[in-house]
Image (cartoon, rainbow, N blue to C red; front, side, top):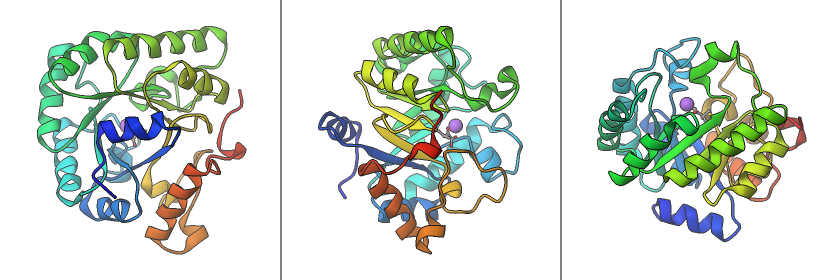
Length: 265
Ligand code: KIV
Ligand code: NA
């Protein structure tokens, strides 16, 4: 596979295709993801749980993201790399610019931020400075304490109208991707239909332009709580690269996610 870029991913989606994304925090997983043809890698703050053993993403620091982005970037040859800005590292535009700069210099090609309309100025300024952004909406794990747990977001008319408006504002501000986590399928479908930019989903149904999973989850390496949208591809294939290849194939063919992986309402 050729090196994926924002342009190549936009083209793939414009032509009606779907792309895949998996988390990686290290060189080994990045090389497996490359070998299996996954178009993009997320250096997610889920590393707080997966690598560091915390109960949430809140303890993750910018330096942690820099360290893991560097490890992934050294091994990566084909995927487009997105990295998270962690909890309270983008609470205002200046802070977001400084921390995004550091993470981009570590090897990220896009910065992911959790939020909505309140991020419009930040997104606009990052775009001016050459930093592509992905805005994560719905179940945004950095807000778990405001939500009172990991729950589906955007249920009901008010909440879905708000998320549609947030998506529109963020896109108008210059965001390049949206990411929807744990929102009802009809809302994810409506946001994807409205959006002129690619929408990545996790627990958001089959209608988004791309699917992302935490690699440890889809490789059967998570013995803890298993979210509804998780599918263990190693159980189906017996080894890592074939497992990731099957995930890619199923996303492209519309076989993953299946109804048992999404929330209809
Ligand atoms: O940190 C992460 O892995 C994420 C994905 C679950 C979207 O943000
Ligand atoms: Na994250």
